[in-house]
Amino acid sequence: MNHITWEEACCGEGANCFRIGTDRDGHSYIAVNGAEDHYLTDTREALRTLIRDIKAGKADHLL
Image 1 (spheres, rainbow, N blue to C red):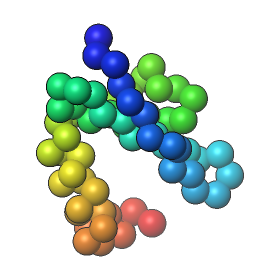
Image 2: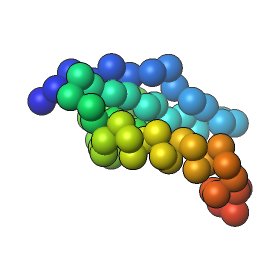
Image 3: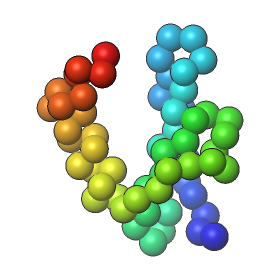
Image 4: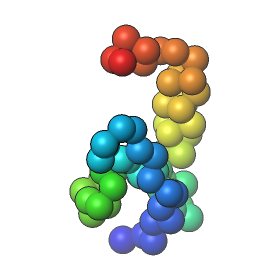
């Protein structure tokens, strides 16, 4: 398994925290803070697209 470098947690109100990580092989990871061993993974490009789409408002209907 590749070494994952986790960013600081992104937290909403209360204890709703997520962490984003990457590895040297170009994979990205998203996990609940404190449960990093249970992550979703894809490519860095997929993570980049997800972040751009969220910033563009494509997930606003989920708020």
